[in-house]
Image 1 (cartoon, protein in one colour):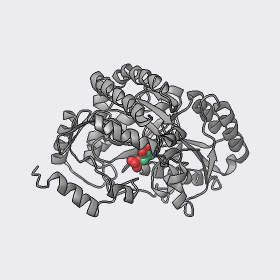
Image 2: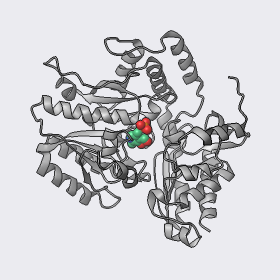
Image 3: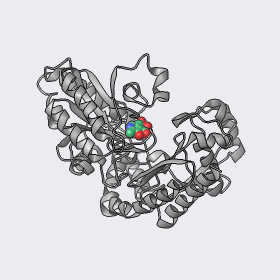
Image 4: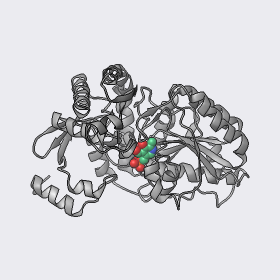
Length: 443
Ligand SMILES: Cc1ncc(COP(=O)(O)O)c(C=O)c1O
């Protein structure tokens, strides 16, 4: 591809015209950005030649690394064969074959696949399908949703109504639908948190459509983990009181937590499961899988369509990529290989735990996170709030950048979420950089 812009031109045009996600505009305009020109494996390359280890898999997507030759080949071949066509009134091989494969690899009982554009819209589908299901089943009062403190399910309006990260939801509170907020099942306290959610379900199940959770690991809230026993108990109580359980595997799916699906740790099948990100890896696409009970409720009347569908629903290129992702996972035993690497992350975070100013660490599968104490950072002269708006993580980011890693923080929480296929050498280098950067940021 012809490149005509210099690195400086890219920055100039960007600052003149591009609006960046989750980025305060005043801060951005003063930033000297990384300018990525290409990516390969676990590395991002700046236009000036600097290499960065991709410490967050480019927003939790590149589990198979960048530029995987099999994905690039499928992208090319599928584009030449059938680039796009509607899925309304049409079937095509990539979407049919993918659906069969997804049903085979997801928890048993999820037999039907609705294709979406990304993670957020897979949640929109879950919300709308839940509401329609209860109407069809003669329980139209079941319209309310329960989600956890700190939940993040995406940025479209229904998805953000479920969200529990205060700074993200506050500007939109006036148009969000009501969401019952349940306490996060924090380490050592999940029984108490479970009692609270169980009490609401028992008392109000007549008006509750679904409980929506990120299974075992809340990403955006700061890589917060919880016990599989909570998820199992939640499955039992939702089943007992006829409330749907929606599990958002957009981040946790595809081996991130050490099992193909985080649900597998608990051995449960939800009523609805949402997936995205690694799903199609190169282009945006996601899916919402449902049980026969949900799908079958749509039978029996001509107005019982799921009134939902985006232009690119079931796009053949996305579907072909998603099939190839699953084939690579199976043939290259990606999850088992990642599981073997995960102890390196746990060991590194144990070392990081000992650094003065580190409040708390945790790891699960191929993620690890450390909360840095704002008070400590304050002593070091930074202005710090708490959590997402905190600044100390950004000092770690700058230190890591100087050392050759891209480690975007979640406020005062720093974390790694590298490609599952990262080499041992690159993983060790990334973890060393993080450790050194935390030390440097907290002096
Ligand atoms: C758990 C979870 N759900 C949903 C989403 C939204 O996905 P997308 O950004 O593809 O819309 C995200 C994105 O980070 C996520 O982490």
